[in-house]
Image (tube, rainbow, N blue to C red):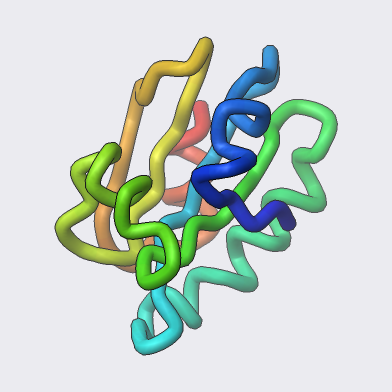
Length: 100
């Protein structure tokens, strides 16, 4: 799993793969519940997608850049553009649908 920061953000999204970014915070219960699901998808889909996480407490500027107002917040990026996003807890099937 890739921890995304301001310093590595541009390199991270410079990819031909679909990118899933999980915006989270340590105090967020739903973030803790969704984390293992996101990790599982990252492992299973590593050939097709690239997954990263942004701790919004450490990277407030990135959260603002994406307009994150509630967490967990998932952003799907293709060609450096957000193509889909979702707020709140999602199960594995719902996240997979978001990626398709």
